View 1: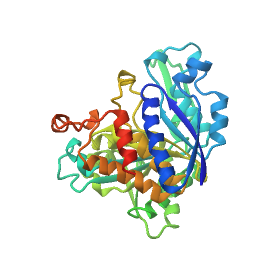
View 2: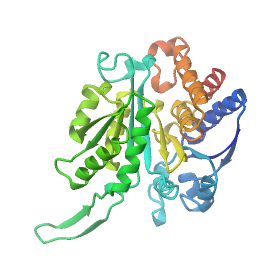
View 3: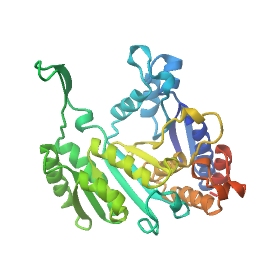
View 4: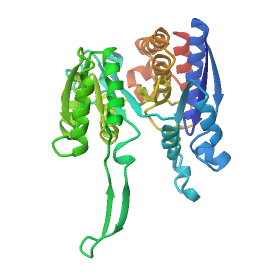
Length: 362
């Protein structure tokens, strides 16, 4: 089968980790009889340097004409004070809005081989950990009405940001979570602040309505403060967590730290139908760019998510995930997950060596 993939290498280590990811995808295509046609386009700081805009129209046009988008990472201090307010991070917001990407999937996995890298006690994550946080991505307080104005002399300056959700927005993200739960452990935890916020009360009511269409799935409701505590106290009680934009932003970063290395974590942003954009959780890490020491595994696993969720290639996604596991089983490590023993044994691998080895294990 032929597939059109828009590729945005981005900034910093983005081009390096993307090169290795495409290497792995090409091996999948070779083994399983698929042809991945890549069109490379610019976004972020690289786009500002080349065009003056963080998200050129050509990039949007190519993305919209593709089956899926692979993104490396964007940003860096070089573009912190650009004239006209252009910032690399605005490209991400633009892509999400223009491509209709309303659901962010953030797996938090602890590989058995890397359990000692987790900051949690071994008994808490014994047997591994596999959680997915489904975050609503285009609504809530980040996209609500906001403003700053002079208040009374006693108040000084006053600022506000409004949290707002519609039933439609909540229903569609809840359906994503329940559909995912049906393919996993058949358990959804909805996280809100319904004891305080009207928007959360509507959230809880609407999620419960959606749950009626999924009688096989168990639904729990947690307040966000309790969910944050339980993620470090007993994370294995969770399977699929669904929550709002701001709560998901916070909880997904907390969950990523449980795993021990952000360099291992993929993510997906999905729109209506099967379209999605796939990227690692980590940033552009400009301090190590060009040194061939970045960990490409998060981006490689993001490609596996693309195969599974957008292209419908489940066994091919399994093959990538197994190759990563086999890489770790062999004792190979990248710098961010490399302890003294692995380094002394010569099992430290560069970015390009990691891509070669994982591709070879497909």
